Length: 265
Image 1 (tube, one colour):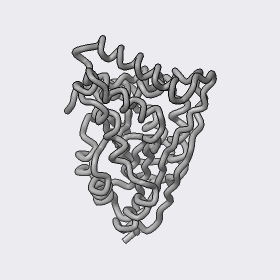
Image 2 (cartoon, one colour):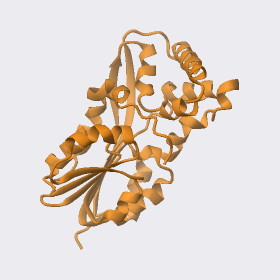
Image 3 (cartoon, helix red, strand yellow):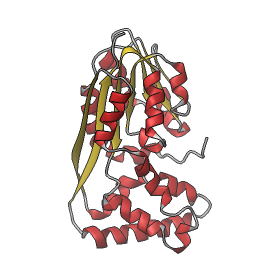
């Protein structure tokens, strides 16, 4: 696995704001009393607990690639609820699942038709799939980061691809709907939702993205923290040029949520 640069504390600076789409996704899920659930990309585990309790599952497995996140998640383990470090695709081998749930994680994994096909194959008859992914890769929070990373010293560390590749993985809402139909799901709901997040200022966009988008950038500059600090300063300054210097700043964050159920037999 790649070097783990996820910072649970930074990610959770906006825990309340990040929880809104999670709650909406969980609201789409129907109970699976006594069933088996997997949370793909469980992070620090506190939301996996809510999935476990909401569904009434007998067992819930939280899977993530970040050792730092899973260290936090370990505190939530109990009978029927456990966590393990694994690639998200690897968890499909441990099915069948009555629910495969993934909140803000699949955008990091390429080839969604293949990935979701593998997940679908691991879901039991009558089982559910529930996924939420960000869809704001056209927002200045992302496009400006890619622009700055395309300059000189930053491009040598991996360039714009470090922040644009997650967006390359995410499909359009209608494409997910078509894929779910092709995979044989009997029911589905797909929606695009805009979540308004009020930040202290335009500059606060950097604090938001530092917990997610900039994680691979920080990893690329692990041996040269001074260059990373210069990048962050340049990124912040360019954001203010493009967006304007607002205080507070309304951050319109787009998310795709979809739920589907397999036929019973």
